[in-house]
Length: 93
Image (cartoon, rainbow, N blue to C red; front, top):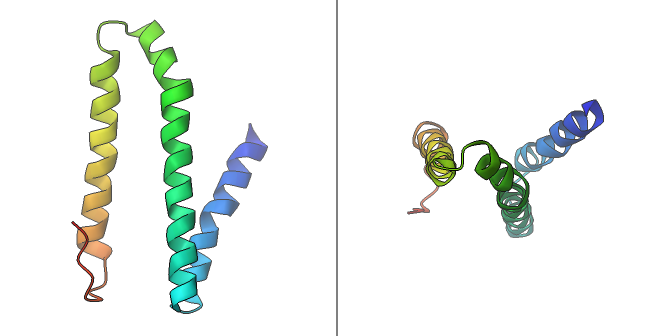
């Protein structure tokens, strides 16, 4: 369990290291691909592993808990973009 946590932390630092080294088109594209892949992995993990366990523990409220968790993560993402995004001319809606 500890090795998974440490490995995830180290892999999570890779995009931050790439951003600090420059912003060429190839780096932006590669960073975007990494972030999309990571998002897909998180979505697959939640749908395939966590959701069935939630349905076993909370059969009446599993979908509500799942949707609330998604909305909380989306809210955190939007807040982070609002406060920390640099104005580079690109508008993402």
